Image (tube, rainbow, N blue to C red; front, side):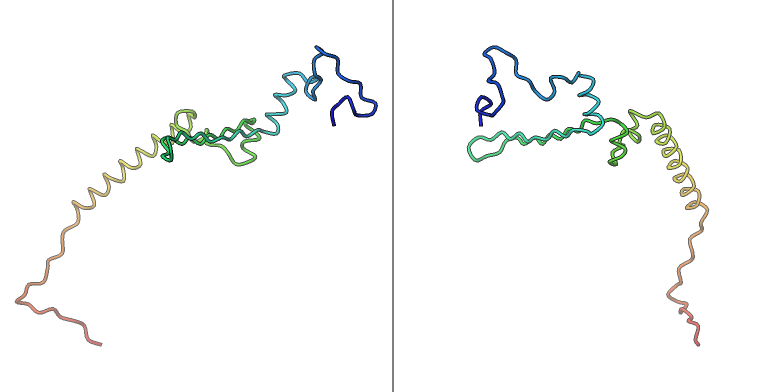
Length: 129
């Protein structure tokens, strides 16, 4: 029903601003609500010529506070080496450990003496029960 036909609702005057649910809210209130609850924006863009799809882009955007993101299980920034100094430290430690393992494996391979293969002239002896 249009607003002018609702009972006890005055018709809007021409040129007057529309009242919305957020008109009384400040930008800070809206931002606080979005960060507290989170918001997801999703969209797909497809470019086609005739029946041939040339480009397909899937866009997923999540806006939330860090606490809310952790609560829902998103914490990729903690392990991204470009964003976390601790992650960079772990990458360096991992590289050092891999180099050490490689060095130990080479030493082990050098220290092992290959077992002599049985010659054809000497038959293999099997233990009999």
